[in-house]
Image 1 (cartoon, rainbow, N blue to C red):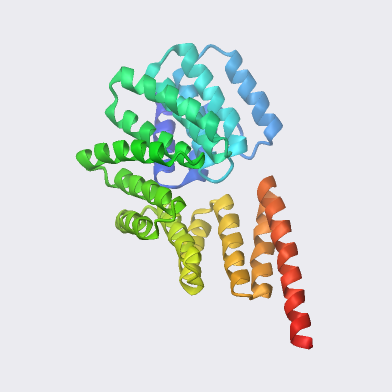
Image 2: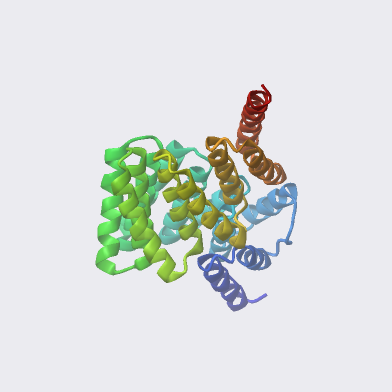
Length: 323
């Protein structure tokens, strides 16, 4: 395969990730790297080792980074990490500063998906320093956003809002609608944690309107799910179910397995709040099935715990009705 052919594959892979066609992006990256589709984890590890033992090639770094992105965007962060770190290793070997910055951010995102926000902050901060050195305004803005999300995860809300508003200011100036919507959503999530529901709804509503206009289904599902969470906190369960079901439809269509499992679980919890335990158990069982298929260990444990509670609740209601 010629360099030009590989470049074309990588361009198409980047576009596929942008258009939420993640399976195709993975296929194209594997083709560029000469790694077979559907390879088991141990075979992927062997292929990565071979790539790292070869002379560093920028195309390999880009392909590995895009491949890792296609995985974590579908809820496979644990499998994505090795590809992300390998991409960074090659970029560092080449001392290619733009690719180093992108790879640092990508590793940070994977750690954020793995709920290791401290590690994520480390990589995002390094990426920001490189972007500032390069004078890459958009990269600087993106990393402020990533840092804000990581600070939110560790409940450092003033710092989270500070970085998120820096990101938003840049994107509002540049007019990037997709990134403005993402910034709105992230700011809304901070206000949700702070239980400022009116502000959270305001920012989520702005984000949802923009994402609907631009057809960003992944972000729309996030917006809808977050609005549903607000209505749970407000104990308006029918409204919560409405938003959760809309979010579920989108993630099922896209094929983001971890999001599908989470939404099924969330819907089950809403039904439990409404004391409809048979429905709650049905949704939790469906969530558990997907979680076991994908190896989402933390979620598997949560499903079993909740199902146990729901069976106990259903039994209590049955006893109550029979007396």
